[in-house]
Every structure is written in structure tokens, then in C-alpha cells.
Length: 247
Figure (cartoon, rainbow, N blue to C red):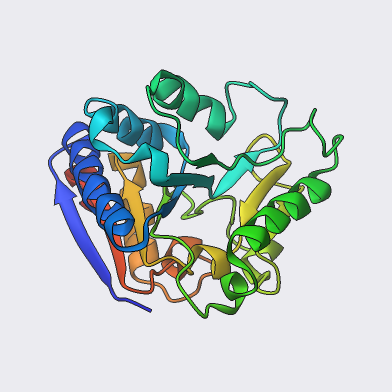
């Protein structure tokens, strides 16, 4: 488990540009070394800003060797504007000339899961198992090259909310959420062991409204109370902050 490194930029726009630049370097190196790169994307305003920044130089990304996963998803109908994958498609993915090697989408409420969020979580866990095997949860090898996460004002990451049972779900790779404190109540989320299987974990946070959360998470070692403090990469853990969030 790696220590936290802070990288601070003046504002959200320059932060997104810096993350995009580093992302390009990481996935390019991964493809050169291993022939493939696996990354976990995040939603929210910072996740969208990153994708838009990446989209300004889309041809530099080795898309044909890149697998995209998501750390969490809202259990809503396919194409709903609140779904992280919909936002990612609108921001970048639908405009690519070269399709990624894999776009691994979490279940929609009107899809094969037939409205059963637990079935949706199990399906994504099975997809992860097919890609990585048991090593994913056992932590034997880094499964992802980079996991990208946002953070809420309550310090939640993915759909791991303070005090909720999913913060203790270490025996599964993916968990169903049925009582999210923010809408919609049903979600699917990767668990801590899955997120922490990455070589690098990046927490991307912008805005003065996140300053207290940054302070709380950085001063805590209680991942149940402050989930953001519980995510760490095997090689690197980077908190990408703008000056407003860093305080």
C-alpha cells in the first residue's frame, strides 16, 4: 500500500488537464510493457472534466489496447443522463475514431438484471473474475493500471458511503447498494479490495465545497467513517486537488 501524494493545480480546468496528461503517460507505458491497459473511470463533474480534457488529444491515447471499467454506477435505465457511462459517452467515448478494446458497463435497471440490483452487481463481479481471476480480491497482483475516483462532501468514493455496510464488504469484488443517501438509492459499486488492487489510485477533487471533506479524509484512518481514506494504490496513491479543495 502506497502513501498519499498530493498534486495541486490552480483550478478545475488545469487540474483536469494535468490528470489527462498523466493518464496518457500511464496507459501508454502499460501498453508498451504488457500490451494492454485496464483503467477504472469515475463519474461526476471532475470525471467529466477529465474526459473532456482527454478528448482534446484523443488520437494520442492507445484506445485499441485500453479496457475501460467503472468504479460505480447508478442503477437506472440504459441511456439515463445520470448514469456514469452515459456521461462518459457524451463527453468523449461516442466521438472516438478508434473504439476501446473493452467498455465494461455496469448493469442498467432495464437490462439483463431485470430490475435486480444484486443481480447486476453479481454480473459485474463475474465479468471482473473472467478478466482477472481470483487474484482481484485476493490482492495477489495489481488488476488495474489506474483507478480514478471522485469524492463527495461526505468523503464517499465510488458508492461507498460513510457508515454503510459496503465499506466492510471485503469478501466480494462488487456490491449492490439499496439505500444510498443520495439519489438514486440503488447503485452498484466496486469494493475496497477491488479498488485497491490497482497499481495507482487517483482521487480527483475540485471546489471549495470539498475542502472540509479533503481535510477530514486526510486526517483519518477510519475507512468506514471516511471512505476516501481507505483507497490506496499498490504503487502510487495520488490526490489530485485544485487550490480551492486543497485549502
